Length: 448
Image (cartoon, rainbow, N blue to C red; front, side, top):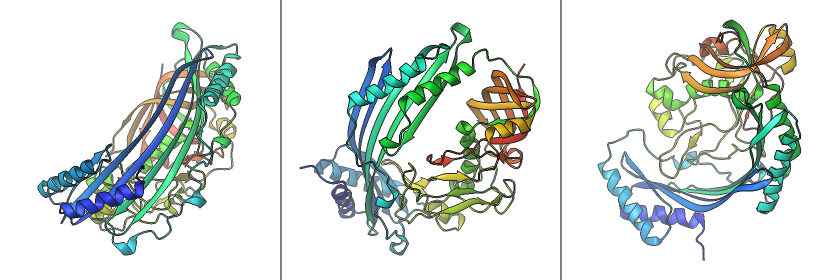
C-alpha cells in the first residue's frame, strides 16, 4: 500500500530526532505531468512523468543541513536522517537558522476556498493532442504563416506535504493546464516568430485552441518585414505580455536575501517613492484559481495580503524567517523551498494598480517611440539598477503603429524608469502576476 505524503514527512522527522537532531522539517512532493507536441497535424512528442521527492532539513543548535531523495524505502529514510545529522554537526553555525515558534504557525490550512486544484480527471492524451492539433491548424490557416514551430498541450498535478517538529503539518494539491502555439512568418533570413498561450489551474478555463493558434499566427504575420528602429531617446511602451518582467526587477530588488547581502539597488529606498503616486504593488496569496496562491508558506506561517509598494512608496521587504532575523524584522510569510535546500524568500501573487487608458490610448499618447512585445537577454546591475535588454516590437509614429522592429536595445536606470510609469488597463487578472502594459518615458534606444 502506498504511503501517504503526511506519513512520509512525519516518519522522516521522527527518524531525524532519533538520529540526534534538535529540530527538523520535512517536505514530500508527489507529481504527475503530461505533455503533447504536434507538428504537421501528427503527434511529434508525448511525455508522461510520475515521481516522488522527499527533503529533510535538520538543525543541531544553530547548525543546519538539508538532504533529499526520490527513494522512500525505510532504509533510505534512515540513511537520509543519519547523513543530515552528520552534515549538520560539521556545518558552520548560522545564528539566524531555526524553525518557527509554534505560536507563529498557521491555524487555517484547508485550501479548498483557494481552488488550487482541478477536481476533474487527468485529461486523456488524445484530447491534449487534439487541442494542440487544432491550435496548429488554426495558425496555418493564415496565409502569411510559413510554418508552425510548435503546438503543445500539457497538464500537471502536484501534491505537497510539509511537517516539522514544531507541530506544523499540512499539505495541498495544485494543478496546471496549458496550451501554446508558436507560429513563423516569412522564410530564410526574413523569418519572424511570435506566439500565444494560456495556462490555468482549471482546464475548463483555458481559452479555445483555435483562438490561441489564430492569435499566434496574427502576431507572427504582424512582425513580417521587421527592421531596426532609430537610435535615440524615446518613450517605450512595454506590452502586457512582458510588463511583468519590468516590475519583476523591482520585486527582485526588494527580496530580503538581496537586502541582507547589501546587493540591491533599492537597499536604501525603504519609505521612499519608487513608483508614481497612485500606483501600488500588492501581494495577495489568497486569490482563487490563481497558480501562486497559498494559505501558508514553506515554514508554516500564515500568509496575508500586503502592499509592497503603497501609493508609490516602498513599504517593506520580502522575508522568510532567516532573512527577517538577519534584518531584525518579522517574516512576511514568504518562505518557499525545494526538497534539497532550506527556505528562501519568494513571492506569491502580484498585482499592480491599473490605469484608465487602454494600450491603444497609450500608443496614441506616446507620439513617437517603441512598443516592445518581446525581449531577449538581460544586463541588470543589481547594485545600481542600470538596465539594458534586447527588444523587438513595433515603431510608433504620430501615435500610430508604423512598422515592426527588431535587433534593438533599450537602456536606462530602473529607479528613474519606474518613477515615470504610466499603466494601461489591460492586466490579465487570472495570472499570478497581473501587470498591465506600462509606458516609460525617455529610454535610450540603440538601433540603426
